[in-house]
Image (cartoon, rainbow over all chains, first blue to last red; front, top):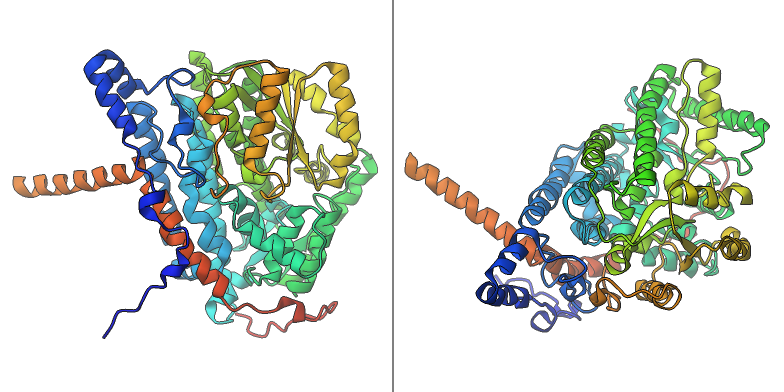
Length: 568
Length: 69
């Protein structure tokens, strides 16, 4: 019997000896320093090289791949915290969550059935690495917990998708299939609270297959964008909607639910997604629009009626009535998260002791509020709150390299959400808060059904990309009051090139920035598509602004220019 | 007994040390990038897929869910 031959042609770039760099220069340098200056060598070992003067983070990258020659030595305590409580812990958490899920075998099958699952999520620790570069002490700890919450939710969602998926069960629809609701990622998970305690669960069609995946591994989504364009869609509509639809075109959507709820959120392109969903995900579907001009009080009533109609549709389809008890229970729990969020914003606005990195605060907030209350969100939020309180009490300067406090406004590049870590380490720019973190800012009253529905409708309208970006120009101009509120001295203005709404208001923003004398950096991008504007180009735009307009020198020059075009 | 405990402890420490080596040298990233990714990419590129555009777009006509549990 002969062993099967491995087709080596699938490793075109595999010249391991040439490509993989195990950098021992750092160790060599440390050894030499130990001889010449033992005190310095011991300080490097115990505290790590000083960021801003001795540390050269850019030297850690392999050329093109963005892999590390070796991971960052953050000092003894922080390196072992990262190793034990983040690297080992999160690998362990993910494995445990999969093994204790509804159907671990189905998840394993899913890894080989769905590209987004097989290719995106194994690289999860690199997502942590990129987002937590340069973070030390409590900033590392708090941000690590935020990332852990996202890992647990992602695993929950893909495990449920696989457990319920008829494609992975020989076409047979099991009990999970009948008890899972499919919905657009922009339909909030909270809509399904009334059935949460009645044996039902809801999983978004695109949150894990598309949105979170792009943050972790930005290569996979390109298949879906190209697939949608291959059937005739021009390249200029919103790439988010292109990608969401492309997943269907490539037959990469699990068949996991008897029904589907879609929406027009964030904009008209999402209506296009709803049409492709209706075509390719052929099952009873309810379109639940979220009003754009939400200031009109009459709209609240209309929106509440739309939600009620969605609930009626679910009742009709599954034959299980809406439970107000279940709804109120989870709304109350969700309110606690919202109250904590406001406390965190206060700390971020008024102190230099806020311990979450720009990426961690933005993604944690958007992810938990969009997908709805879960125990792992609440547990990790409690852990973060403890660290926040400790930092405030001790007046810890959590980001000591901070030179500028930036408000990040408009919609962020998904393929480069970790630009915040880069900007902090290179230029001392701390993204204090970003626009979409501020949406869903409603503590919902639960004293009467009328109050509940009134507030829930408003909450539903104040969704990401809707509360400010598509809610009318005066809301996108809330930029100025938040600039003051969060004590910022700079705006990082995201410029989503394919967003027609935001392009329409570009000139007005430029006028306002000039009139108000606010330093603003326009960051062009194309949401998930890294080919339109790549990461190096974004870095170069920021570098140019910081040197020519601000007249500053970089903190870490090794990060100014590097090639990570093949990286995740 | 003492020997056994020491042996288990030694093995545990060795595993921990190897894991730390993998962590600090980013061996997980390198293995995923250079070994796992080319294989899984080829697997997905070669996978036969249904031509979804052949699916008729019909309003209010759904598959029958006759295998209700």
